[in-house]
Amino acid sequence: MLSKRVIACLDVKDGRLAKSIKFVNTKEIGDPVEKARQYYQDGLDELVLYDITASSDKRDIMIEVVEKVASQIFIPFSVGGGIRSVQDATKLRMAGAEKINVNSAAVKDPELITRCSHAIGAQSTVLSMDVLRVRAGRAIPSGYEIVINGGRTRMGIDAVQWAVRGEALGAGELVVNSIDADGTLEGYEIKLTRMVADSVGIPVIASGGAGKPEHLYEVLSEGRADAALVASMVHYGEYTVGEIKAYLNTRDVKIRMRY
Amino acid sequence: MITIVDYNAGNLRSVKRACDAVGIGSELTQDPEAVIRAERIVFPGVGNAASAMRTLEETGLAEAIKTAFYKGIPILGICLGAQIILERSEEGEVFCLGVIRGVTRRFALKNKTLKIPHMGWNEVRVEIDHPLLNGIQTGDEFYFVHSYFPDPADPIHIYATTDYGRRFCSALGKDNLFAAQFHPEKSGRLGLEILKRFAAWEGSPC
Image (cartoon, each protein chain N blue to C red):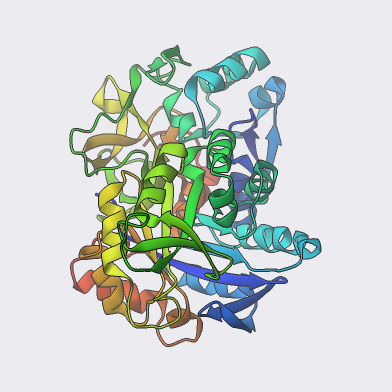
C-alpha cells in the first residue's frame, strides 16, 4: 500500500525563504536550499517550493533555486506560484521540479491545466486552490469558495466543483489550502479536505493550519487526505519532520520510516 | 562512467544529478555507437511506451540497447525503461524490445479507492536476491509514478514485488540487465544506494 506523505512547503521570495502568516507580513527566515536539505535528511517525503516573488523581473532567481534544490535533494518536489503558461511549467520541469502547481492563473484560464497536463503529464500537473469558508448558497453549495490574490479576491466558484473540474481538465493531484486555517497552527480544515477527497479520484494534499503532529493524523485519517503539508511547525524548529513521522507511525498511519 | 540513454523521455537530468551527488561519472547520449561502447548504461524514461518505442527505433537506439545487452554491458532500466524491455506494452499496443518475455499491463483496479497513477512511496519486497537489492530490508520504500507495470512471463525474472490493489513486479531483470519500476533517483538515500551499487556492479545477477 502507498504511504501517506508528509510534505513541507517553503515560501520563497526573491530567492530567500519566507513564511506568510494569513498571507500578509512575510518574514524572511533563511535559505531555501539549506532548509530543503535539512528536511530531506529528516525524512521528508516531498517538498513544495512556492514562489511569492512579486516582480516578474526577479523570476529567474527561482529557476536558480530550483536547480540548486534539485542537485541536493533526491525526493520529488514541486514548484508553484506565478505559473501562467506551459513555457513557465516546462522551464521549471527542466530545472529539476518533478511537478508544477498552477493556482490563480488556472482559475482565470482553466484550459491552462489541460495544456500543462498535455505538455508535462497529468502526474506532474498539480492544481493548487486557495479556499475560503463562506455561507453555503446556490452559487457555493459546499460553503467553500475559491479565492485568488492571496485570499483577497473571491471568485464565486464552489471549491468542491472546482476540484472536480480540475481533475476533468487534467490535473493529477490537488492541493487544498484553507485560507481560514492558514497560519493559525490550530489544525487543518478537515471538513473541506474530506469533501474534496470524497469527490475526486486523484490524490489530495491538505494545506493550511498544521501546528502539531495530531493535526496531520486527523487530516490523513478523518480528512481522507493522501498527504499533509506542513510549514511553520517545522520551519521554526518546534518539530522535526522525523518527529512528525514517528508520531504518525505510532498512530498506525502508513508512513515511510526508513530514510 | 555511466552512459544515460537520452531519447526525449522525460526527466533524464534527474538521473544525472543523482549520479553527480554520489560521485558517479555520467554522460547523456543520443548516439547508438556510444551506447554499444558504454561501460554501463542507464535506460530511463517517463512517458508513453508507443512514442518512446517509435523514437528508439527511428534513432537506432533500440538496436543499440539490445546489442549492448547481448554484449554483457550492465544495464539499469528505470520506470518506462523497465517496461519496454518486455515483448510488448498495452500502452499504445506496441511491440517493445523483447529482451525479457512478458507484457507491460495497465493497472485495472476494481477497488475504486485506489488511484491511478500509482504515485508516491511504496514498499519494495525482494523476491530473488540480487546484488543491486543488497541491504534492502522489509518495509523499505521507494518512489513510484506509473499507470502501467511490467509483467514478466517467467517468475525467475521477477526480483521484487510491490502491492497496489494487487501484487505487481517492481524490479525485474535477466543476466546483466536490472530494471526498476520505481525511481532510484527520487527515492532518497535508499535509491541513491542502488545507483552506487549499479556503478560497481559487474553485471552478474548473483
